[in-house]
Amino acid sequence: MNAQRWAWAQIDLGALRHNVETLAAHIAPQQLWAVVKADAYGHGAVECARVALQSGAHGLCVALVQEGIVLRQAGVNAPILIMSEQPEEQFRDIITYGLIATLYNESTIVRFARTASELEIMASVHVKVDSGMHRVGVQPDNAVRVASLVADSQWLILDGMFTHLATADVAETQIAQQQVSTFVRVVEQARALGIEVRHVHISNSASAIRRLDTGADCTMTRVGIAMYGIPGDAATDSFGADHQLDLRPVMSVHARVSHVQKVAAGQGVSYGLKRPLESDATIATLPLGYADGVPRGIWESASVLINGVRRAFAGVVTMDQIMVNCTDDVVSVGDEAVLIGGQGLELITANEWANKMGTIGYEIVCAISARMPRNYIN
Image (tube, rainbow, N blue to C red):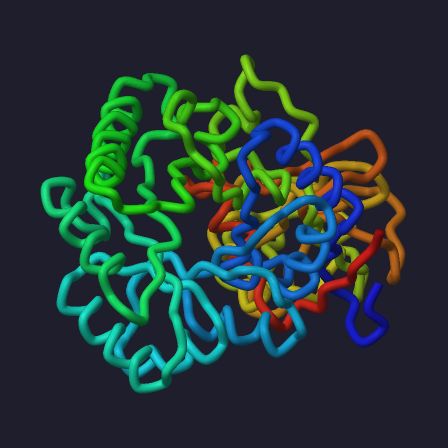
């Protein structure tokens, strides 16, 4: 526990190591590239990147140039792919820090090549194809032209082509298979024209677990949320009945009781006094709140573990504190509470919170704020 504060997120690097090794074995012979964008989904990008690379990952994926720079400045030398186009003002940083650019607009490719020429540095590029998600990427009927533009540039290296599946976590696979077929056709057309494509990749975590890219001759897979032990399907909170991998949650969220008081029946707790107590109760205060990533609206249905027992929120989550109804049990200042994770025989998962909030586990862990100390264990 971080001694500076009585609330912290615990990051189990042993679980992360196990998950990467398990997933790398599952997708072999494809390479695993670890997605560490958004500070590794709130888990800590530098620490998680190092463990992932030590455990079988061949490269890393980020969303922003600054995320890649942070890794480089921390001494991470592995390939780092930025997964979408970035502002022209950041081209020099992409190239000088040896990051791999994702490009899909012809005008962007021309400007990026010009910057590489000015720096006299060869720059690696992956071309993203929009096979059906309609977020970013070149349309399939123009993808070969774009790939050729990169390949023919004196200062650019066409290091890869990729796409992203919109429905990889949906039971019905027809749409995903249509996307795969569209993308495979583009790659085949490019290669038929003599364009060399080193890396071909389709799958994210859900697709990797279900092997939706089987037969697509992919060389790598982008693994994100599964690496952190969180099923993408919040409703079932599982990785799929047909693909039971032993993946373990990496993050847990903890606090220590900072104050205990008796509150009489009929009294309310927290802003608005919204839920009058049905009987006299022991109310425990925990020193974390929505500024730390505990959703304000979760108080009506979520639980907290104290002494191995599920306890209801006594009132709305405040910015810095939450109050928990411990009924007539004995609870003391300093007792440990678990908001996400296990204690005794009980377990609260990120997806349990997600289901209550109508969202996904990704959002829950990404929202655990930077002011929450990260305690890394092995």
